[in-house]
Length: 144
Length: 169
Image 1: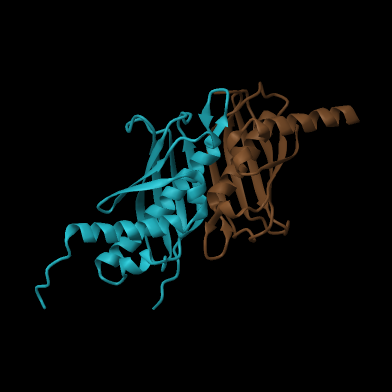
Image 2: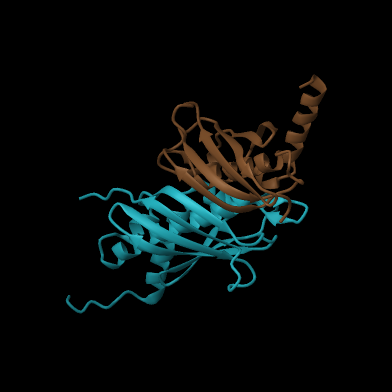
C-alpha cells in the first residue's frame, strides 16, 4: 500500500470514529481498518468502571467497543455498500480486564453474503495470550 | 413485642429507595450513561434518558448498539442483584439502611450476554425491565427487554448468564 493510500485510510478511520458520538464519549481510538478487518482500542477511564470494589471496566463498555469494532469490520469489507446495523451480538466474558490497562479489540468478517456480515472479535488487555472477551455477531450489509 | 407495629409506609419506601439508590450509584458506568431506576414494589424499570453521546449513527439518527447493549446489561445486573437483595431485606437478613449507608453487596459478574437488535433505537428515552429466569446459588439466567415509545414494540432484547457473588456463611 502506498503512503498516500495509507494516509487516506487513516483519515477514514478517524472520521468513522469521530462520526459516532458514543464511540467518542467512550474515548475509543481507531486502529487499522480495511478488507473486512478492524482494530479499535479504548484507554482505561474511571467513568467506565462497573465494579467499584476492583475498578474493573463495566461489561457494557466492552460490549460497546466490540460492537463498534465489529461494525467497522463489516463496513470495511470490499463488498459493503457502506453503513451497517447490528442484528445480533453475543459476548463471552472470559475474565476481568486488568484495571488501568487499555482494552484493544480486533474484529474480522469471517463470512459475508449480500445482506449479512458474520463477524467475530476478541478484546485484549496487555496480556495478548488471554483474551478478556470474545464476540460473535451478525451485521447488516448497508443501512438496513 | 410479638405484635410490633410495622413501620409507616414512607419509612419502608424511603429505606428501600435508599438501598436501591446506593446500589445504583456505586457503579460509575451507570452514572456515565445516565441510567436511572424507577421502583414499584419489587419491580424495577430502568430508564436511559436520551443524550447525544448515546448516538451511534448520526445520519438516521439511531442509538449506538453498544449503548443499547450496555443499557440492557446494566438492567440485568441491577435487576438480578436487586431481586436477591429484596428477598434478603424482606427476610430480615440484610439491613436496607446498611446498604444505603455504603455497605453495598458485590454485584453478579457477566458470563455471557446476547443482544437481539429488533429495530433501530430512536433518539428518545429508552426503558427496560429484567426478568430473572433462574437465580441459583452460583449461576443465574436473566432476560431483558427494552422499548421506547411503545411497550408492545421492543427495540432490543437480551439474555445473559451471570456468576453470583459468593455469600458469607
